[in-house]
Length: 570
Image (cartoon, rainbow, N blue to C red):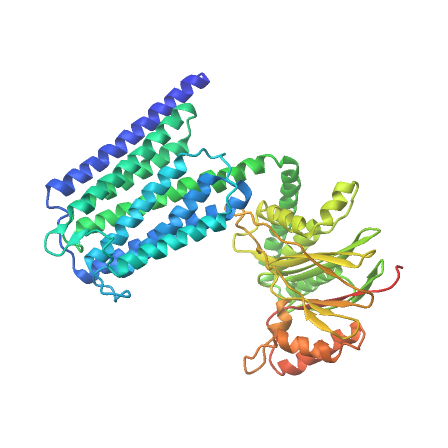
């Protein structure tokens, strides 16, 4: 079959699919309009429960569309995406106000009447129809130079103004619902105008699809057809608590979800797949690593099965595994160039979820990282080994290799992608901090991926500062929907200055009264004992933790190290 014939076949199938959907909804509309099957007044309490559930689902979908497209705007600068994002931002808030204003709900600033809820409904639907139509006037690749924050601010102001006018029943708002006669002609006319806008959107998509056939365009057309069916149904109800009204809400929620699915695939899933295909060389490396991890996991499964019956042997094997993991942990005192590192590492159990390392990148730079993996035990230990292997530079043959490891934010971004391309369980995640010290300038550059423990900066004169920490996005299995950007932070150090790094096992240590050790207590201790050398400070921290904990057992790994700037290199 030729390429042209294949395209013609796809177009034929898509047209048949669209016609089938239209036919189904014509039948639904006819049944609603000319029979009493759906003309049932529901119990008010039951209707409110169902209405609330449907509206909450719609609001969640709206804000999900907003958050997804708003955050990727920095990477795409697509004016189409920013219009979609802000459209569903406004729609989400208008739907919230519609829900809170519905007759039977607790008073929302003023008395809840059908007119109030109907007004919010009309404005939400009009916003959705105009926003989708406006977005579709632009192609996917059309760029925008307008700041997304200004657009969001303008939409927020418009939403607040609309909310105020509706809530306080301004004369500027026409009557959409009459307590005696039900829907007004104004409301019905506006519903048909909204339908006209949606049909215009369908026309634009259809014309574009004739130039370049895309299955996503067909799915968007079907979503808009469902939206049209919803609007038609909302011209037919009389009682705000009847089943016709409820059916309209069901179709609206379905239309929202279908639009979200199209935008998600178009803007997040599809680009990710395309990028993945361009990274074949890295994928080969990751695949090999996955095979090694898989082989080790299979060996461990077999061993664990046998060790259920031989407890002593299990303890010996765990001790051996602990020795392997401990072999990856630096010694309590190590020196790279003119940088001293003093550390303390106390695993919670046999195997730990914490890991840290320091290493020489070139003659002028020393790197380090600190990792806290979720959970404890074998799975967490395997993740620390995986992280150690990926993050530690072994053979830096080119200047590009070195430059990569000198940029913490790029290292974290690459590690996030490598982690997502591996076969670790979806629930696994880790937080970490990666930094590089320039031994010539004493400039320390660092970046965080969800690390929630601000390092403590100890100046030589005893002044103590808590370093700022842009927490960034944790290393987790969300790469198929979101690729974060990380931020570098830079601090200028002097000779004799030190920085204390630690994981949350230190400041979240608890005592018998369920009190936490806290960053404040740690900072106070360091301030009082700054005159001690690095080894002495760490020893004092450990002693204070033991005294604070008392008879209570630790519930997390305790990991900390101090980086100190010296005058000359070794």
